[in-house]
Length: 307
Image 1 (cartoon, rainbow, N blue to C red):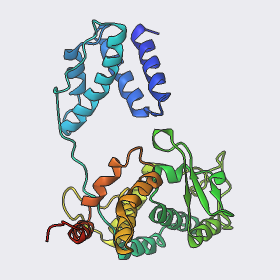
Image 2 (cartoon, rainbow, N blue to C red; image 1 turned 120 degrees about the horizontal axis):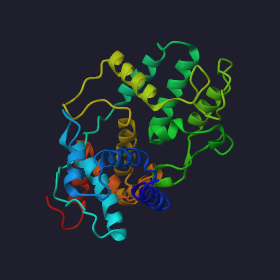
Image 3 (cartoon, helix red, strand yellow; image 1 turned 180 degrees about the vertical axis):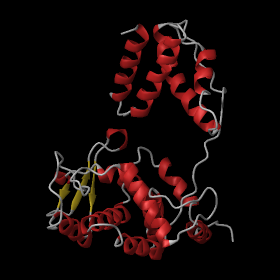
Image 4 (cartoon, rainbow, N blue to C red; image 1 turned 90 degrees about the vertical axis):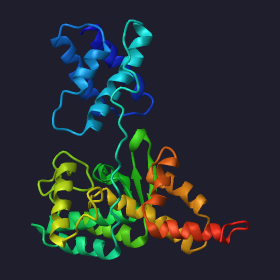
């Protein structure tokens, strides 16, 4: 193993000890080191880092920025070991990330998607996607977290779902309403549930294996097309992840409508969603015009509020 490869292994181990998974970073940085080795270079230089970062053609410049950012982090670590290492400047390939605008599904949209799932092949597949989508709607889980659930993560007696090793390695318990608990129980006890193949997964495919995220995404988009949901704008298209946005917005709307403190609810929501910092949850406020209006109305009712 070369010194750079050893340094990369140490760098990844250090960051994973802090809770980061770094699967994509490990893959890309390994490719970067191969690029260096092919060029006969043994030390990281800004020129080489820039050349590697901009290799992909026909892609959004933000991808170049992302690639260079990964190298910059590694280079910063290397610089503490070898001061001759060049760290790419932060203003090199600077790009402002373009965040997708959440597609806020209505109750009618959700009902239509669940109904469309009834048209999938095999009764088990129908039950799997109806239960999975329903669970995402009522918990706001990330789809990756949902398909990573094992049978042990569902406590029917307590009505709890435990998300283990979520983002940044954090775990959390999500209480379920009785109807949701019953729906998961019924899914697990169906007679058409395939025998699991070396997996303890809660959600299984027709082959008895754990669901793959890319297949779930593909099936969901097929349901979106079947229902006829259309993009609102080029940046606002129906995505599976947007069910999570719907959950967050609905939670905040309920807080306003019921007269609860939205700031307190936002803190609880951040924990429930598995956000490391409530700031990651705040931007949901701007996702729904109704939320913005309720926030403005609340401000006007405060002493000294503008009329």
